[in-house]
Image (cartoon, rainbow, N blue to C red; front, side, top):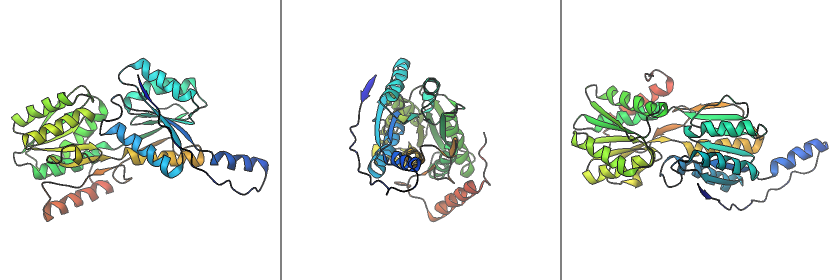
Amino acid sequence: MRIRTLLVPLMAFVLAAASGCSVMKNNESKKTEPLRVGILLSNVGLGDESFSDAGIKGLIRARDELGIRFDYREPGNDKASQEQALEELAAQGSELIIGLGFSAKEDLEKAAKKHPELPYLLVDEVSDLPNVSSITFKEDEGSFLVGVIAGMKSKTGVIGFIGGVDVPIIHKFQRGFEYGVRSVSPHAKVLSAYAGTFGDDKKGAELADGMFKAQADIIFPAAGFTGVGALKAAEQAGLYGIGVDTDQFFVAEKAVLTSMLKNVDVAVYQAVKEFSVNRAFAAKQVQLGLKEQGVDHAPVRLLGLSEEEAARLEALKKQLKEGSITIPQ
């Protein structure tokens, strides 16, 4: 297991003026202490230029703006290491422990049962345990938007989707993307392939190259670091790709048309902000879509949208927000 610790400076807080009963004073004093947060990153860990990096970005913002302290663990693919990482975060005094990614659910629930006094937050999955709160996203909505863009800009009418691991959450990306493509280009052909991993950029490049040989001119990899390899392969081939989770334009600046934004950083920051004030969450389960600013798309670059295309995209986005477009499940 790879273990790294961020040394976070404490910010000074001004204590409220003493007033009221002693219980109120104690509560006010407790709320002024910096919140200690621990986070278990996804299996790929930092440097994935996607999901884990976004989670840490949210905590860095919370550190800088709210004065929290945080520590993190990168478990790799070793299940025992993941369990150990969660135990370490609990043992060092974390007041809130975050599990980033659906793969953390099983081990996080084990830890939550062992430490019922500790609050946990699971990102990308749902738990029924009383001390585990959940944040999920409407990935299909964000994927629908970039599917619309791909359908508008493809010249060959062949578009590719590359998934990381073949699991339900990635199927949501695929369904939304395909529905978006066909909403503006009904006869388009959407190729699909799964890499079986989120951490193999070479596999991503291999799958992308296969799709380019089959006449695809735009690909959308929802595959973490595997997808980084696919985007770079698009750049090598002089073709186009769509990023995921964060704005991945910098990954392949001659290839990335846009990115499906899954605002994990914003969600983590907002959750920690709420918890730092109340030491609790108002809702046990939260789902964030386009309406809640949980998903969106990055600016469209390289192949700009015409006025007509931009207007059509905005109209479809409005319909999606209002609920008049329903993505098939």
